[in-house]
Length: 145
Image (cartoon, rainbow, N blue to C red; front, side):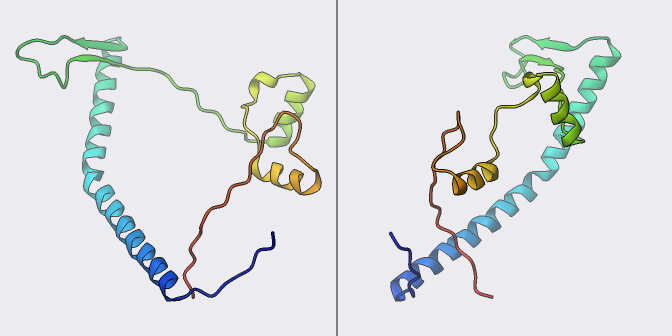
């Protein structure tokens, strides 16, 4: 099916303008909301650091607060420290050479490059082996300059 560009009639122009108006409202409301909770987010971060420091100072990694008549349900429960490991590739070529030479597939995350598959699909009749690919359409809006 051949694609073609059409000029919007009046009702389509109204629909697009209504979308832009609502989108601008949503964007503004989101910014205002984010600004309104910023102080609370900072306060929570400071409290988290204080609690973690207190736990470390006492040589503990968790604390339990039991429900009791004088304890609000909101704070009853267990607070604990968990460790997270975050890694990133600093030298892509060195890393992939290591993975290939040492058959270290366990170091790879099972995600495919969307752009790589897009290029592959342009040159082949289907996706690479082991990959399922679908093409979806999205309606985009661009303001005239």
